[in-house]
Image (cartoon, rainbow, N blue to C red; front, side, top):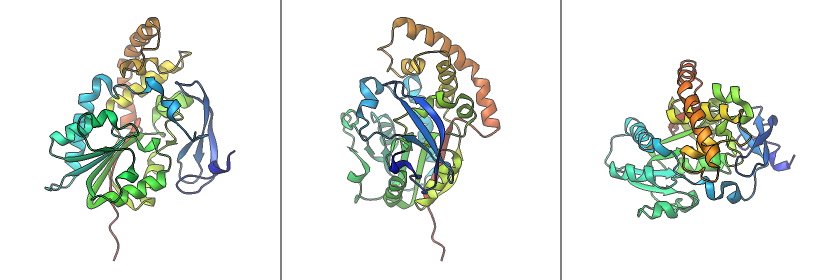
Length: 308
């Protein structure tokens, strides 16, 4: 093993092998997933120095497809129900994609800023979008920072969260969503679970490892939820399809506008079967919700209050 991967990125604990072969749906390469014995954080191994070719020209499509409007509305409700009622409403969205959420937040009265590796699509809407967090550092602090399924893409969890803590206003809130590596569907589908998404997902969180990572950065979780329905549904249906198909993720890519390189037969057959499995998965959603092990973690955190 490369010495850089002998210890956990957050706590320095020993890493043990969880999955020996997890397939990348874009390059068909295989990766290993290691798990920290101390805090439970999962690590993709190896972690490529340059990830551009693992995203590829087909990766960027509509992030949420037909559920985009519903998803944005739900996330705005998370923010409004969580953040302080104040005239200062500065919001930073880390990993803002095409800027759809930033546009909605701006319309709702927020002064918005974003970061994205490829900022040009969002900048086309005249949004303030930087390449990375280091280009944000030194600016005024934010009343709300959001990370919608972007923390797992970051190279350094500890350094990223500590920088976010600096950028957060004293009474500001950090709201983030990540796949739940301890969910019922993750345990059932193992290395074929859709949200593993190696090597783009460099890290894999469960409730304990996410809380530990935040606390280690000087942040405190004060609320959590487990529901982003479209993520949880597609996690069930596409992961089940991955057991039936030689080529993974065709149904998911079709829904998100990224699957045009597949044959018409592959797209049609996977759409029919995937739709049926998605409907069937509604029962699984109820079960995972009842036992508190849904496919997504959404947490709200703030800076720790110093003890005098």
